[in-house]
Each structure stands twice: as C-alpha cells, then as structure tokens.
Image (tube, rainbow, N blue to C red; front, side):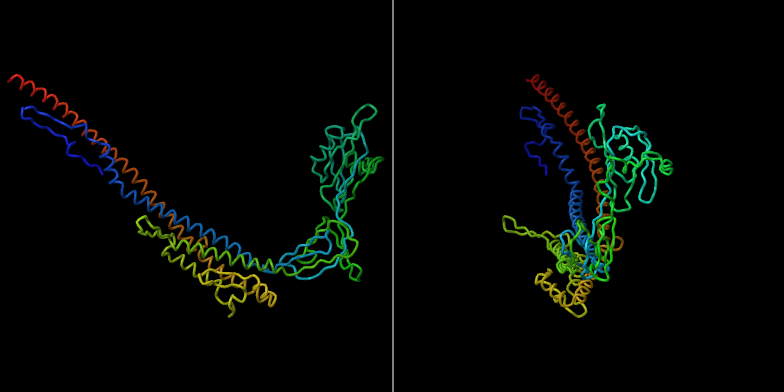
Length: 475
C-alpha cells in the first residue's frame, strides 16, 4: 500500500510578507509506487487463480502417479491370470553339462537321457596358395544348392571378401601361411558354416556351377593340402538309454526345445552315463508371485492413505495449519481403496485369505506370510493356486474399473482435471494480457499527470518571481 505523508503533499501558499510559494508539486509524486499499488490490487484475482492452478497441477500429478501404479499392477496381474500362470516349475540336471528349463506348460516329472554328441559347425581350410587359377567359385550346400561367388581377383584375400559379401552361410578368413619361392604371401582360406548342424555342411569348388555339374571344377576342400577341422553335425541324445524304449533325437543346435511339452534341454558335452532331468514345482517362485501382488496392492493403499491424510504444520506461536492432501475428501480414491482392500481380503469360496498367508493389519495395510502360503500350497496345490487366481481376478476387476483407458473413473478424473487446468491456463493468459494493457494505460495516465504538475511547478516558479519583483517595486 502506498501512503503520502502530510509533509510531502503538493501545496501553494502566500506568506505574511505576501510571497507566494508552491512546493512538492512534482518531486514527491512517486508514480511508480502508485502504479505498482494499483496493479497489485488489480492482479489479486490472477494471483488467486495461479495459486489454484498450482494446487490443481499437484493434484493432477498425484492422480497420474496413482494411475501409473494401477497400470503397472494390472500388467502384472493380467499375466498372472493367464492359463497355467501359476504352474511354475524348476528343472534340474544330474550333469553340469546339461541345463534344463521349464515353462508353465511343463509337468512335474523325470526324464533320463544320454548325450551322444553335441552340435558343431563345419570348419574347413583350403591348401596354401598365393593365388587361385580363376575368380569364379561355387559353394554347394548340404541340399545340393549351388551358389556362384565371383572374386575381384585370384588373390585369396579377395576371394574371402567375395564369399562374405555373398552371404551364403559361410564365414571366410584368409590366413597367412608364409611366402612362396617368389616371396609372395601365401594363404589358406578358413571357411566356417554360419550355423551348426548337419544341414549346414558345404563344399567349396573353384569353378562355376556349370563346371561343378560337369565334374570339371576342383573341390578345394578335398584337394591335396586341404583339411576339414570340424564336421557339421547335429546334437544327439538318447532318451531312456539302455531300455527297450531307447530313442535317439537330434537337434541342429545344442538346444532341444520342448523335448517334453514345456521342457527344454541345452547340452554342452557328451555324457558317459545316463543323466536325469527332474522337473518339480517351484514353490518359491509361486510364493513370490502371490506376494508381489499383495505388495503391489499394499503400496497403492499406502499411497492413497498418504494423499488423503494431508499435512499439519505448527507455527512458532503454536498455531497449527492443516493443508489438505490431493485425495482428502475425494470419494473416488476412497472407493478405490475400499475395492482394492476387499479384493484381497474377502473370503474365497467361503475360506479366509488368511489360510493362504494373506491378512489385513490393524492399520488397514496388508501382509503376506510366505511360510503359511507354502504350507497351504503343499497341502492343496490346485486349491491354493485356484484361490490365489480368484484374488488376482478381483484385483484386476478393481484396477480395471479405476484405470481403464476409456472408462476408468481415475482415468476420467485425470482427463477432467487436465481440461480444467487447460481452461485456467487460458484464463491466466487473458489476465496477463489485460493487466499488461491496464499497466500501459496507468503509466500513460500518470506520466501525463507528472507532466501537468511539472508545468504547474514551472508556472509557480514564474509567479513567485513576479510577485517577488512586484513586492520589491512597492517597497
């Protein structure tokens, strides 16, 4: 607020000696303070609007955080509700060179097998040479397919480059082996199949496919000085070895996928005896799955409670001030809290969730006893997993009602808040424009006033001089 003291008030006076005096017409007129005071008063509504917008933005952010947590929980629960989702198994092998993994499609069982051989890539080298006789070469695959490769020159390094560029399923490297009688560097081509397995075997000829067909091309991998370091072969295992049911199965890689439904085996070395693969229920993982859902719901309940509670601050004089939270008095989040809590805590087929280790604490939070859950799982595996999936389904229903992207009530509330904030932002922009115009008007008005007063001050000085002169002439 701007005040003007009595001593600074503009005035015109006539003294006892007849002298006219004008004072403080301009010097003590603080137009800047006056304009600022008027603008402060005019901007009260905008200040209030912006304070409300700040609160609205905080509330929106907290709603969005809640919705993100709901969506994360829903993603987890949706996966847990899929067929066989809780049929979690662990697979172990009696041989360290055999690794086994089980999916939810597997069953608890044992499988005996022996690894006869592991899969390998073909690795072959040509004889050492400083140059080939031509630039045309042919790769012949295991199925007889012929692919021509043309090199830029007869130099082995150019031949290796051409093979790699042709992408025929072979990696070629020119390995320097020394020099010939003329001092020229000699090379062997090392050719390695890109894949393992018998179907990846190949032969390599100097000549065109027509030459190969005619039998006039040179097989560079069987020529004198050439060698096959490793033959392409499939991995082989014998199931139920030593029994009448013994059966050999093969794989082009060292992985036998779904050797039984849901069971995959990876081998890395032959075995000298029978190995046993054991698949059993993974109680720890099943318990973790159930506990994670309870924990996810618990975190949501805690977040809602915190935002509903608000905060109380105490001033130095002992007075307290309560500030409402984003969810204080909000019926939607209260409804969500109730629905989530009931989804976990309501009986399942007449049986309390506490039988499965799930309980509501005195403060409304949830707890999960993994030991009690495992005991229930041991006692009744199918009944326990079925009950937990019913709870998962109820949680999913509650979360979907709140967070569905099209009709969820939390989602709709977020959209409504965003629209409200957008409207307030437009109003705030209008206020800024209006106040700027008002300040321009006031500045012009008080500038004119100051100019007028300045002129009056000048005229006052002139009159004073005239009166002084008149008084002097009359004395």
